[in-house]
Image 1 (cartoon, rainbow, N blue to C red):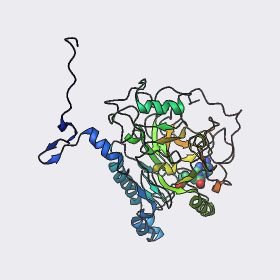
Image 2 (image 1 turned 30 degrees about the horizontal axis):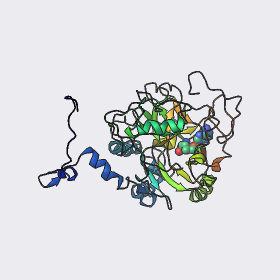
Image 3 (image 1 turned 90 degrees about the horizontal axis):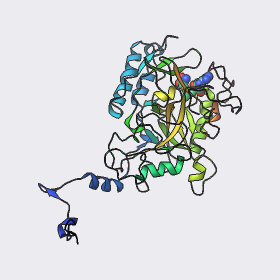
Image 4 (image 1 turned 45 degrees about the vertical axis):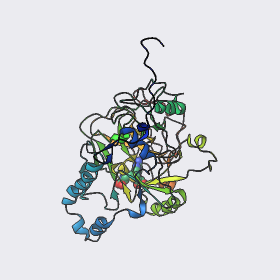
Length: 383
Ligand SMILES: C[S@@+](CC[C@H](N)C(=O)[O-])C[C@H]1O[C@@H](n2cnc3c(N)ncnc32)[C@H](O)[C@@H]1O
């Protein structure tokens, strides 16, 4: 042994005894995370969705439901939810310069969460992979478990994480594996974006041709910005099919099948069909008002946080190009026109509804296929 080396420490029997302070075990970050693995992430059941407030309003006369103050009440309902879930998110305002409907129909519970339907298993920490990084994860790290698993999945397209250091997404449509509750890294690690909530301004407004829609606020939204989670009920496909038939009757659909192209490669014994559908009709946030465009400025992207089941990503919306102030925010209901591999599709219930997106690339239908040759991405778009 050279004089510089310290002799190995003899293990003490106290090493494995939890530290106690004032009679209570001392919780460390490490022990907290180890305990968490044996618990279940928070989840909500669709059958518990609150509806009393909505029922109360819907019992009122049509005249009473037209009172202008419903517009403010709608904004307050949104603000109350966001204060809990994403307190940093700018408030959402409501406007209608088209007719005298003060607020969208009171037919849903405002929520940023997913509500699990019958036979949809809750998320589990058991199989969740996580990193043990301290501070912020390094996207060039060779040891960070989260960089490794992201690169295994999407390294062919992008190295490291799918986010830039400023939180902007590098490429839409690829599955994102964010650092999760079991990871050692800080809350401001660059691989935690969706979980930290919306930062851009949005408002909900009435359009002339498509009912209510979502609009940008006074500042440009840069390409790659996270806009929102398509929240709602997560339903087994058979239930969604039944609902779809009903929604068809009134020609408005809020159903999105989760059938991303990569799922079939990740799931052992994949059934060949999408297993789950998100329905934002009875529950959802402002993203349920996003209308379809054949030339959309936003795109759907699957994101996994505290979820290890490939068939249950969050559906999230990111800006696909820079969105100028006040522009309507839209995405494609038939998958991304610039990404032929993406297959998330709205259930074809309202398939016969004529598309009124007004873009020069309009295909005439909201759920139509895309002509590969025609749809080259613009210079400022994700390609
Ligand atoms: C997810 S909702 C969007 C919000 C809806 N506009 C509202 O008022 O609640 C989808 C429905 O909006 C309407 N819609 C969305 N995009 C449209 C488009 N490009 N052309 C015509 N109708 C559209 C259709 O009725 C569709 O079924």
